[in-house]
Length: 295
Image (cartoon, rainbow, N blue to C red; front, side, top):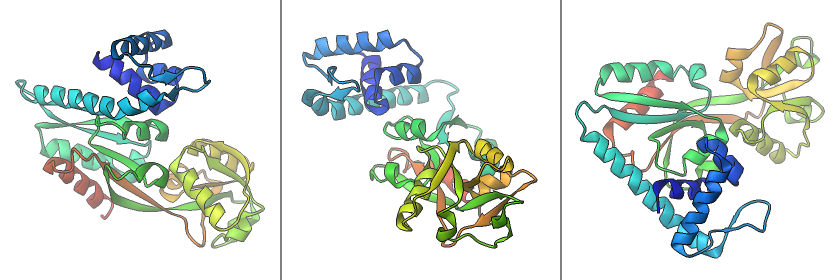
């Protein structure tokens, strides 16, 4: 049994397929299949039901998965402890983040932390939501910067510390009659052609929960990245629901943002790995991130 085999086994579960696992780990799909087969031979049990299009754990696989996660976590912890014993070692704090760092000015406190703590280095990894939330299932991170998302952050294993508050706004072209309004109501959203962020994003989850709460069947004409949907607004293809601080960095000259009433709050925070919560330097970095947004 090898570390790679355990990694492949767990990643298949987290990504949902052999193909996604191969893409995530940058290896050939055939290598994934061979290593899983070798692991099954060694364990003497079948881990996956291969008769289905999407991989599904067998009952044996379900029982072994928690132990596999535990063993892989212990291997990573052992390697980390060994690195700390090496001469000239710099303590590493791994920070996962959505592509929002510049919008909240987080690069400044990160740089300041490294300047004030020369024996530490920040390992910054920018990920989209699906990849980031998969990483939260493991122990290979200390802090993850993300919007609060009930679907992915209610497992109780890690702690979520609010860092900054935000709101969803409606971005409209200045020639749109809605641009003259001081705020937008749920009733006015019902017949508005809308462009939203991708379905897997935290912002989309907040919007869809708002629609359900107010019995709105949204007229969604397009989904895409923030810069794409705001470009669509400028081209008069519809209006966009987007986080206010994100929109403030991307709004074009012909696009304005309007508050929504009742508001759709979006809380940006730091997910702290349960293994890192007692590390005073991790807590110090989180405090610096919070202080930056309270200036």
